[in-house]
Image 1 (cartoon, helix red, strand yellow):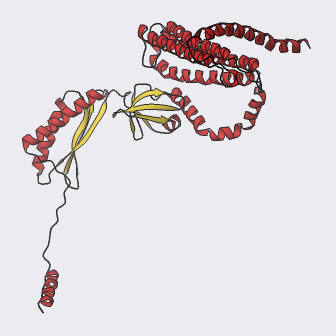
Image 2 (image 1 turned 90 degrees about the vertical axis):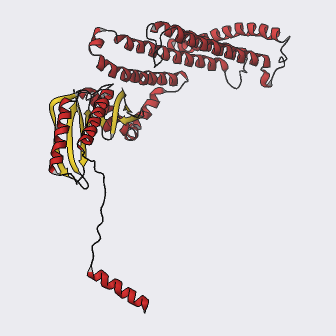
Image 3 (image 1 turned 180 degrees about the vertical axis):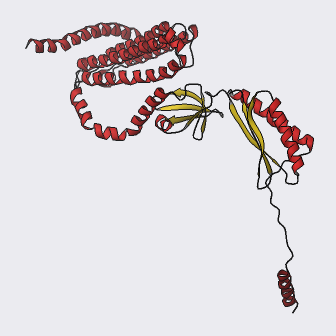
Length: 409
């Protein structure tokens, strides 16, 4: 019995506190309204007994606080060092303080504005509604604060010796931990929000348990992607910054998320590949190799004899032996096949780097040297072509003569 009385008294105390604050704000608001009424022609009450002057004051106050909040955030971004993700590099705690001050001012403006409007008490009990509303605002504010502080802690871990020794692992885990943090805090905040507004969170969770099978069936792809993420972090076939090839997709790994991996291709386009697909696909990590393959064919004309082919082979082998940037004694140059329209020489060598700009420069220099060498010995490059030969046929001549006889007759 005592517990019930204590529970019922709690909202009364909170409501009395809100009423006291509301009365004080109303008095200041009434004084401000009467002062503005001398020059602002909005003193007549609008529908429902709400003063247009109060409405104008509330709108102006909200706009002012929004402007102050924007100035604070812009000032923080200029005074402090900000990286691409909007996080403070040198003084992250100061950034949090700037942001929280702006949020507090905005919430205060909303609270004062609702109080000044003197909303009617019926059919809705605005005291209870206001109490729950401010509890909701406080919950959102607290959730944002907790996430900011915990994400800051994750960022500060990067300055420890362990994180510096395992820098690549930390870069992969950091966005994953931030995403998990958002989901966890969001779920807890949603449950508390349901309780604040008088609903039974336990019954709702029980209902979700009954519908869990349908939910799992609908979210099977997402669950598979999460397991794919676990496999990626367990095997670590690649890391952020690696140049990889997955199926027909080739590029640099930009982010490994909970659901997918983002890859930036050489044309600067971003490709998002689900982690479940990656876990079941062959992955070629080009960065992990100390070298990269250069493989191409040179097709020479069929009019060239064997001696010309031997000269071409000797020239290309000498180029591959002396060209800067190629791995020595690894690779080969051979006469490969008689193609459909060319005699093909296959070149298979390796660049001593996986850095894309340097690799392309080595390959370009090699191709230009091969072209100049072929020009110097008079070897011509073949291209796909087709020759049609017309053969004289006695039968065809007789048919032609018969047609001419009919035409003459």
